[in-house]
Length: 350
Image 1: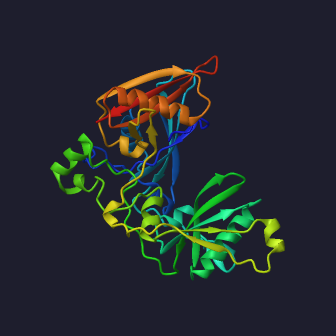
Image 2: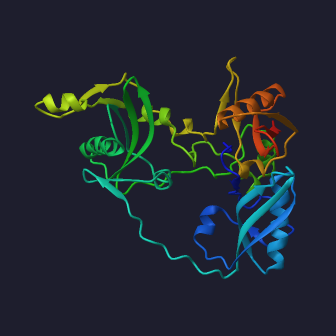
């Protein structure tokens, strides 16, 4: 979801499946991280869509002798909501590789804690939920690591937490040292059930490869429900600090969840930010990279004062659903030159 609090918008677009008229090609964030850029440039203009400023940057990169480029940020002018300043790094065809620095991982109870970017690439072998009173993050990590160690985990990743009265429930995924790579959807995968997705599948070849694939995982999140079923998830109650002092042993009590049937890989699908209305209708938000590959059937805008990102998303999703859209993309948010109101531009997709 686009952040209201940010004035710079990260663009992580990949090369479009349609052959480009320009030589300089756009890199993904992962590709750019591996190469050394030789220059950074900006382009300014009235860009109404993401593809407009991608093409403009490709032209500019050509003139600088670059073989490829990576757009880092775009800045929307507060005085003109159609004017954007786009920043990018440029790369030569023979750009040298970046030196890979050794990754430093935190360790608790002999078990490593994986960052999200690493955990999402790997297949977990189990999932645990620890419930109790955790006054600080160190105790959270130690509690999870203790349970992970019991299961022979090499590493863990804390993915979610929820409040239950004065306690918290922490959800974490566990990994073996030789964990297999997950089959990830492209970050900019086109929704299978969209008009653009069906057209790309009909074209076949490289175009079809840009569409969501059954059985592949979301590149931005774990599907907790899927893994809870797959591993017959358990909830582990940890004693409170007071109880822990009184207890003869600090062993946790295990409560087995209702028996479930292991889920099939086909149940996995990409997970996007979803707006749910009071009447039960739902709609998903597309990221910049996916929206750049699709053609909207309509665009709406609305203006008002919104405190949170969720308020903007809810209002965007409601208007999109009322127009018969399956997906929406917040193209830009323009701040009023005087006053706290913003104008939100939303592209709609079937």
